[in-house]
Amino acid sequence: MDFEVVIGLEVHAQLRTKTKIFCSCATSFGDEPNANTCPVCTGLPGALPVLNRRVVEYAVKAGLATNCQIVNDSVFARKNYFYPDLPKGYQISQFDRPICLGGYLDIKVAGQEQKRIGITRIHMEEDAGKLVHPEHLYGVSYVDYNRACVPLLEIVSEPDMRSSAEAVAYLRALRDILVYLEICDGNMEEGSFRCDANVSIRPFGQQEFGTRAELKNMNSFRNVQRAIEYEVERQRKVIAGGGQVVQETRLWDVEKAMTISMRGKEEAHDYRYFPDPDLLPVQIPAEWISDLGASLPELPQAKKTRFISTYELAEVDAEGLTSSRALADFFEEAVKRFANPKMVSNWVMSELLRYLNDEKTSIDACPVTPAGLAALLAMIEAGTISGKIAKKVFATMYRERQNDPAAIVAAQGLVQIDDTSALAEVVRQVLAANPAEVEKYYGGKQKVFGFLVGQVMRQTRGQANPGLVNELLQQQLDAGRP
Ligand SMILES: [Zn+2]
Image 1 (cartoon, rainbow, N blue to C red):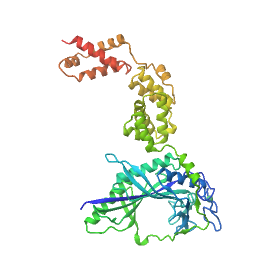
Image 2 (spheres, rainbow, N blue to C red):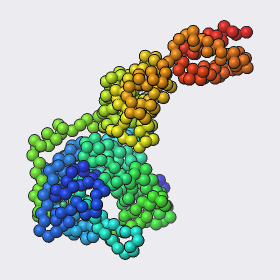
Image 3 (tube, rainbow, N blue to C red):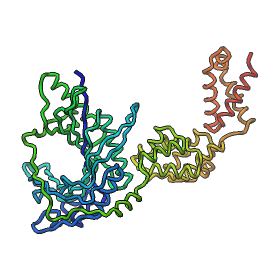
Image 4 (spheres, rainbow, N blue to C red):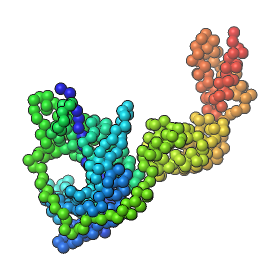
């Protein structure tokens, strides 16, 4: 029997606020344990939460950017459960009146039509603390409350995805938006953008959903994809073997490359939600919503579409260039100074990104400036240097943080040789030094031509004008044809 895969995703995005959601403690990552705590976030009796206005602003921005309706009197609820990292005994979250409802995101998987994925809701909540288990002290746990009360958005999708590729495309699109809005740093390894996946399968044509498993602990796009694929296959085998899929939470184990059962349905929590009496409903004036809407930056999809139409770029290039706001800005800055978008795009996507990736540097810290790159490309176009020499110059620019390519070319004597008589002499020498190859060429081996061009380029340390070399070589070979 053939099965259809059904996937819904719950994303937790940590917001980039300076202070926590209900107190003024810092949210900075990696500080000494419990350095950033107070009576509110450690849940001491009598401490009262005060909502951080910035969190509401970010939640509204995320909602508007994902086409949601903003609920202007949403309510905070207590989600009750006991765990040592949750000192109050409940987590402040939102339940039946979340701040955003009913949005969507359009995604595109290579080779498929664009597809719309529904967003059920977005709500605000606080993070919990963290248990630390020291390596050499068996049975001992420490608690670090620095993360307690750090603001999160939970973004819940409809079960609209039908493959692991669609799930990853949705996650990427969502992360791009949050990062563009500058409300989340999108770092999956550090856990500031994390996702749980609800995965089930059903026979094609069946209306009701199959029993689902909830997958946790996937800290990269690659792991999300692998975990879903493993889980779909596992459920298929269970059903093929006459068994039944049970509802449970499963962890992705990277080392073993498999999902492992964590807890079953019978242990599933009953959270007994009720409205938090310490917090008023969140009222958002319509004017504030429209101001926030007007302040939204151009979002990744709109930017990509504009790059394709304005700069006539291929879709794959436009997608790469708009994958981060800083990279897109770099590209547009360079194009302002050197009006050949295709050439700028090629250099950014190949040379520039290769260096950045090799050195694990982000575009914000790129030593080559848009103006420097534009100046370099102008030298290629003017015929002052060849593309090959330009790559050497680029390497120097990058390594030495030097953004004057003309100075590097002058200092290293790399100016392209355009002198016809000088090049004709080199061509003569190469032909004289390679009589056997020349004979093969006359015998019909066209490939030898490329070899001879290569020899001339070598003699001139890559500085000969390649067009001119081709021309001169052809002339001399034709003239000497027996
Ligand atoms: Zn605090």
